[in-house]
Length: 277
Image (cartoon, rainbow, N blue to C red):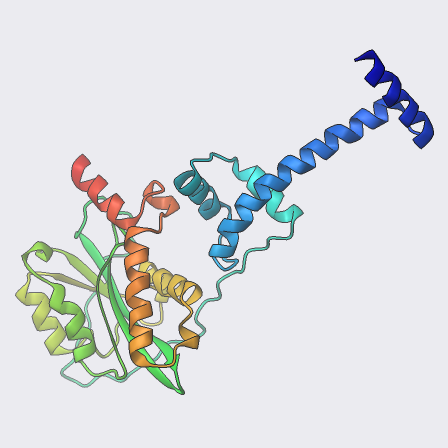
């Protein structure tokens, strides 16, 4: 130990630095090396998310996939230190508006932006979004559980005919009785065929106020994440796009933990609610 200390003093003297300065540099270098190992773990998760994961998702993935608990401040610091900047999702700038015929009718906003529910199949949100494909648009209809955030049903078509929504509602059975389903005031949801299906299953209908997409925020949030996380723009065929949507919805329901679901996936949270009810 004494011999090592003599060598250290000699090297410090040659380099023109103090011994305390040398050990201070060692301490910093050791910390930087430790940061680098943590950075590699964070970057692996960050890259899997295509640069769209924030500290919450990274923290959940570290615990879920690597059994590593890391403070959010440390994750934020390392991301900033190594230039891992999260891409921010942009809001859809406009929505398609279709005129209603006189036989169509709207109803009141019963949901009233109450997005916290603790019983599965108590409230759902539904809407349609579009996805560009080979110079055309494919239209995706989704029904989502407000309590669990689970996608309950969906359909995708190259058109906006009523069967797009009616096919989505084919999932309805006696489990959905007395459920509240919220939508916007679009042509499909004011259509007598749609209203009749909801009545058949004793479902309560709720609608957003005109021009208030925030009233249907849960489904808008899902569409935003889907468009961020699915590489749909490189699809060549309709079947390829449909397969990507199917895979993503399975992933979203079963393998994508969410911060507000106690860090569980929608299916895990649904089972949790049913057990604790």
